[in-house]
Every structure is written in C-alpha cells, then in structure tokens.
Length: 362
Image (cartoon, rainbow, N blue to C red; front, side, top):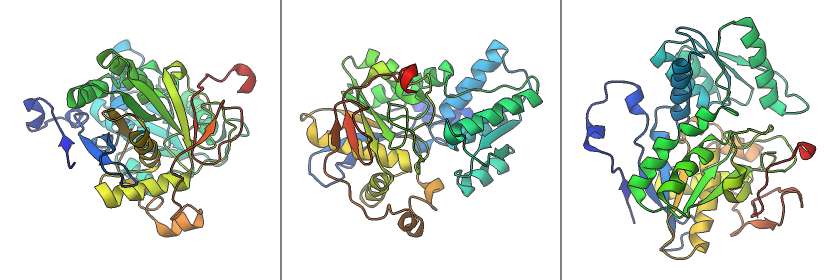
C-alpha cells in the first residue's frame, strides 16, 4: 500500500497568509511493517510537516493561553528549558506574538538547532553540568528559575507541568480521527507527557476503546526505571512531569538507542519518511504491534519530527559507530517485565503494568 492521507477541508489548500496557519493539518502515511512482513503495517502521523515539528502546536497554544489569562504581558520575555523541539516552537511563537525568547539547553543540543534558534532571534544559554538528581533537565530548570528572577515579568511555559501542553493536542487528535476513522491503538513517545495525554484524551471520545501505548528510552525515570545518562533526546526524562497520564497507558516500551537508529534507517530506505530518536523508537514498537495485533486493527503512531536535525547523529555513520549504535538489528520482539521495578531495561523491553512513581521511589 502506498497511501498518504490529507483529508483536510478545502480551505487548507488555499494560500496560507500567516505563520500559525502553517501549523497543523499534517498528513498520515501508511508504513509497512519494518521487517517486511506483507500485509502488516501502521499509520504514521507526520508531525515533521509542521515548521519546527510537533511542539509548534503546544508552543503556540501555551503562549496564546498565557496572553489571554494575562500571565504573559505584551512584549515580556518567554523563558524555558528545552532540548530543541519546543525551542523551535517557542521561537515561532515569539515571532508571531512579539516576545523575546530566552532558552536554556545543554551540550546535547544539536549544532543545527542551536544555530537555527539564534537565526530566529532567540537567546540560547547552555548549562555546563548535570545535577546529581534530575540530571541535565533539572540543571536547565534551575537556570530557568534564575533567569526568571533576573527578568521580572517574564513567563515560563513550564512544559513539563503546564496543562495547556496537554490541551494543545486536541486538534491533532481530531485530525487523526478525520483521516483514519476508528483508531484501535495509539502509539506515542513520552517525554513531557503532553502529546500522549492530549491526543489520547480527545481520541478516546472519538474512538471509544482506543488503547494508548507509551514509548520511552532506556535510562528514563518516567515509568519507574532508574535514571541513567541518555543518548536519545526528545523522549524520556530525568524528572517526573505531571502531564504524564499514567492511568491512560495500557503498556509501555523502553527502547535503546541502537534499536531506534535501526528503525530510523529502515524507515528511510523503505518509506523515505523518517525522523529522529523518537520516530525510530515509536516505529519499532508500532511495527511490532502491527505484526502481533489481530488483523484489521488500526494502529496510529505519532512521528514527532523529521530527519534533518539528526544528520550528524542518527544518520552519521561515524557518530553511530563511536556510540556503538550502528547496524545493530533489534530482536523481533521485546523482552518482558512484570513490573517496572523488576529489573532495569537495557534494551527493548515491554511492561503492561503502568503505575505512577510514588514519592518513595522518585
């Protein structure tokens, strides 16, 4: 099957006269099962067709809502922590609504993204050391708090805990329902928890019975695993975002960097439509579900971005060889855990017991 769906209203095809009109209305593409089993596959929502990726949606929404509430005054600075994608969205929002943007990142931000953000007029600060608890994310957030003290009247969207980050994805869910009709399984990467919670919340009203499958990275604490240094960016966390809707997930998968790289490159050679770490991890899990779910199951997977910013990581042979993630085909099925605390996931692992971490094990 070689199908791409864009069943948006006719007005979507007219010339787009504003930047905000460029966000949304992204297509879905049929992705054949990655191991080549005929007749199996899933639908991918290609959020890389937004100017900066999936987080253009929450960036614009969070800033618009903050302005409506009076939390963000005209011309006041926006200050936030980011690994990259939300930063691109906030740069867009700053241009649209007329706000200077100050972003705090870490040395893992790709040079391309850093240079683009600078070109878009944002100021990017880079923290130099991770904190013992919370790692790079908490180090970035600590610097954000300091900057907020230095800039009275500035606004921090706080993507990890802002409910506007969740409600921003209502339109994405409605697009999916219009494009695909009934959806049985939704596969989402999990970082801040925004798009998994927001898309599922709306989709379950439009497709009763839909199941949510979460995709995390090894070394992430979100679903009760121990914190470890993480190579993959865009999914996973060293903190516990309150936007994660733990009760919504029917299962969670942890994926290792080499497995995501294999899937990204397999997507590129087989379907051209590919992306970065989150896309590879999500595609690996969605492809397995396509092989194992009953015939006729409609699986929708969210691809948060495209491949461009990963030219020097995922798609760089030298980088991948240096990090021992090159040409390592994943197993045909994930390992199993009965509970997240049973063992540490070091490669692709699945668990159908999903619980929110308690204060005792955070």
